[in-house]
Image (cartoon, rainbow, N blue to C red; front, side):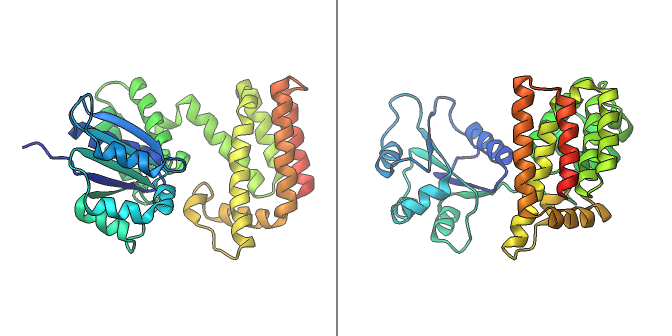
Length: 318
């Protein structure tokens, strides 16, 4: 027997890839002719949403109402949303996309009673290799050895959307029936460059400008296109620095899952370097990198020289 869709679903979590995956699963249960209407919870008007939910579809079989940023929508119209969830329309399916939804809230309890709540949180660092292995096989028909899944998890982390994209690319280049090993992954040119860039930013994270300069020049010798990707990688590193500085300024302990790139002694050195850089040093680094990005895009100076100057300037700041 086919699974009957429920009148309301809550997709809860920060991972947009998992939310969209769950959304596709729900849509697959609905008639192909269902009329879909999307709203942004930050700007959607309550009356318009309720009218769509309670009116019959002019075309197709039933309605699908999807509200992204549902946290904001519920915050603005909590009582009215609770009233609707207590007696939802049967000719429409409502999907609310939340970042968080505490179990203590009445909205959670009503959705749990009348519909379904789907967790969209990425797997933990320990469980990530297993998720990669299962997803690669199920979504892309790619078999991966354990060492390959672990290496991919270390290189990319819990960005499931990017993991899916990289797995899809690997599935194309791997011979049918072959089980991907870490050696195959490490030999892939794109991944080699990413590993080398991580080594550069790790050197910066540890305050070792000499090693960072050496790695930068080695990268340029092996792949000149690196100079056009460097700003992206350095921005990601500065985002990590900003996160640590903001946590310590507010007296909060950083969530080390968000700092998965730095392992063991690297993490300790990175934290110390963040403290040494401080808010003023971070502000100067962000301003400098923004200027370099603008220069690169405007053709002012050589991109490779601009990046090297940034590394040296950062060393003087630290």
